[in-house]
Image 1 (cartoon, rainbow, N blue to C red):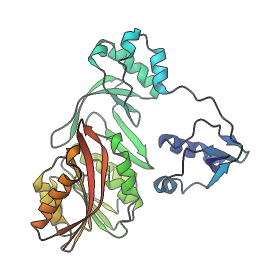
Image 2 (image 1 turned 45 degrees about the vertical axis):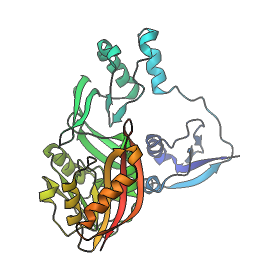
Image 3 (image 1 turned 135 degrees about the vertical axis):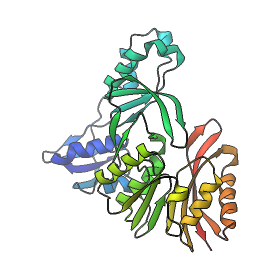
Image 4 (image 1 turned 180 degrees about the vertical axis):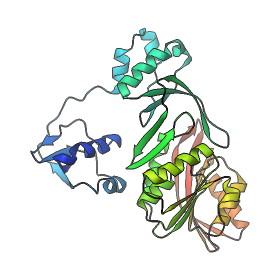
Length: 349
């Protein structure tokens, strides 16, 4: 029985392999077959539409490898770190097993048991994972400008370019957030049908959702607003770097006063802390006949899905709008017993 694979010309093979690896779609348990002018690259499963779009510029063919050759899988990064570090066995069990690699900057958190070992461990993690700098997450995201509290413990340069789904996100990781846990939602945004729509992203940041919408969904115009001047400057750079200057209009300031009203077919509300004033503003941004809202919120898991739905219905009712829920998705766990959810809804009169 064969396994799924991509046939690609050899000249494009390394770039395609890199994209598949980055998205966790490369099946490392089988060898890549070299057929002279072409490669056959084993994949884990059928590729999502967003990845197929990313690979459109390459000549690829979905096939079945009929005679795949198994390979010895190289050790996972954590295995290499655990084996190479000079710690007592009692200390090794405290080594961080989770991290975020944002471009070539690594973000992790060391437990108190390893505080004295941080500099040499940070260098080891950097070497194994190919990072130029290592930051420790001290307190997550704080404040209205959503600034992370970080400490640099290896390297000096914290500005990087993170590539995901063919989109370039430039940012300074010391000053701005980038959540790998939201990747599924960024990929989902790229797969929406927004042809000729006017969209408002009320909390655009560096373009987390704005960029996949602009690059892949064929909107007419996107108003992308953020209150943080640092994020806003990177948003402008990312608009240029991804070639969507004619589509995205960046706006600096509080979205409650900056984004025009009555103009949008669709709004994205990525601010996860419930605030009725933002929700009221979002409803005013929609066209008079209504539109689509992507409403993000954190709520107790036991209150899902009723709490966000009820909040949206109460706000919409005040403006004589009705609500039809299209989809409700748990994006990730935000804290014990707390979920980050997104509710897609049609708002109509």
